[in-house]
Length: 316
Ligand code: TXA
Ligand code: MG
Image (cartoon, rainbow, N blue to C red; front, top):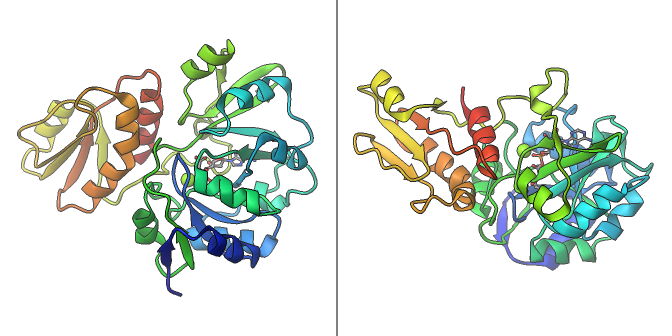
């Protein structure tokens, strides 16, 4: 199969309508999309990604109104969040309706729903009469793609079409929230921060990060791993421990003059800029001839917490 890259929304819609897979741009990362209501198409997502079937998929819809058919209820706190943050990098774990196949949710009675903020993908979703199941468009376990060419690097020859919407502006996956009793709970850190949620809604979410619970299927700790060793910590100390190796560093603002390669993610110290560049930096260093990647611990505030989460899980 030849994998084409293009900007043809009609073509993407036609392929998806025929049960094929299409990689789609979103503001977080690229997704590997299929008709969520078509079991065969969904099976193909698991196969192409090499993803274990116990790891459920997010469904994507054009609006919160369009989401209503696929869930049994939208609690008022979630409606409030959706008003503020959707379309955008926030996803909602909600009780699923019978329209959503068990294969999508890996047997769970809850489904994660997201409304992506990318104009091409919103237009695509508006043309379709089904939601799109779409995990990140990388082989399972590798770094998520933020450009069409990243998708091709991982999935060339396995899917017919990549809808090219440019570079993902947020660069980290969506934050996943849900409700437990009357509390809003954050299950995955991502593009929307707890601080953002508090500022816009007055809600103080509780954290219950799924990958920190050993019994949660699909939330494997190591998830974003490059093929080179990646170690997170004090860069100077790690450089002296690994003296003699070609060391590549990932930092917010610091340039390490004795390192072999440096990826300074935001010289001005902007964590959103750093988040947007993180996955590209990890890929570039992984494709370089450095021996080892050493990353700083980022300031653990705002989206910095999500950066640290991804670096921690990329580490071996
Ligand atoms: O930003 C994003 O969310 C991107 C773009 C493409 O929308 N998608 C994404 O999907 O990151 P994925 O599959 O790579 O990550 C979804 C995470 C997985 O860790 C999965 O285990 C969890 O969400 N998840 C999905 N449905 C779930 C469910 N019903 N219950 C618990 N966890 C769920
Ligand atoms: Mg993923």
